Length: 365
Ligand code: FAD
Image 1 (cartoon, rainbow, N blue to C red):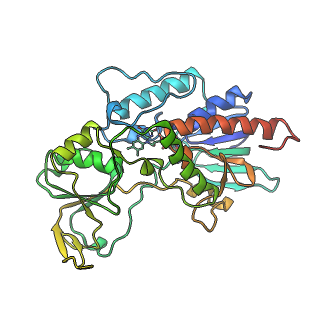
Image 2: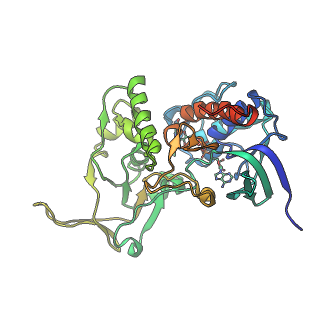
Image 3: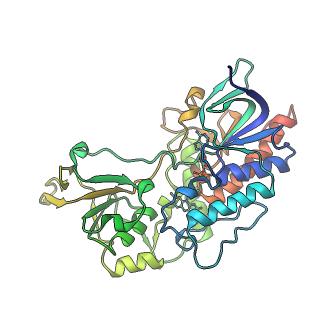
């Protein structure tokens, strides 16, 4: 039998911070839940990527999870796990605003139709939409760089998405790769139960003072410029550096576990190796585990049939929409890949979609 085909104005793909803020804003802009717009989410339960975060990531150790519009995030006292508290909040949010979230529904492809709409293909039938908002985040696309010899390593290699507990590594030497918040957090944690080595491509940027709003804006502006030019978006956090006064960083510095080595050149069967160069001798460190805390890419493979990617490796953007296509929005992408950024972008996208879809003749800003 042929799958159901349903017709709406807007399909939102993904129900994390980005998808939920967009859904809330679409309802405010006069789009009727279910008949005018739906949210399709691949996960079994509310929470976006937060439901999959490692258990030791608590509300207190996140940077900060900003409120979704219209309902404050009020986690229980006692520093609960982010993987419990945020999904509980999102579930409440979806109910409170009666958001039309369909799950689990995985979008496999989005294509243009002959009459210039979009066919959203899923494992639960298809939707036809006049516009789409992609809010699929990055969690499903962990990025692991390639190094010579990697395939011969006999130990365990894992990405942060697969990390569960430091105890899993007791008695093993762990090499942590990456210079961001995940790398440092996990390094400090793992070093309490076993020996570690930290390697990063560039020396970490230590920051004495909390990041002020101005510096935050400058960081976001840099990523904004990258996506306007169609380059691959870097992470906003990558620009902000690591705050020395953060308790876990302080602890790591005090215990000397945050002394980093430059990136190794090769992986062997039983460790990582640096070639001799520039007057430095070669070096080898035996390892049982390589933990790749090397970030993510945007989860946009299902958009491939739309041919959005340019020669710069990214998608050229104009605000929250694809340049030249005000009916395809990417929320939580590039400069809006933070909880606060996703909030703002969701609302901007919904306002623009009202103008584009409900006020014919008006050109988008
Ligand atoms: P997600 O939360 O990843 O949601 C995407 C949703 O899309 C998921 O529900 C998924 O099921 C769905 N989806 C994906 N693909 C498909 C598909 N093909 N079809 C249908 N549905 C699909 N940011 C902050 O602002 N503060 C923090 O403290 C913070 N801490 C972080 C800690 C870690 C360890 C990491 C990795 C990131 C952190 N971030 C933080 C960044 C954070 O991920 C984003 O700010 C934000 O939560 C991402 O929201 P999102 O809605 O874009 O994506």
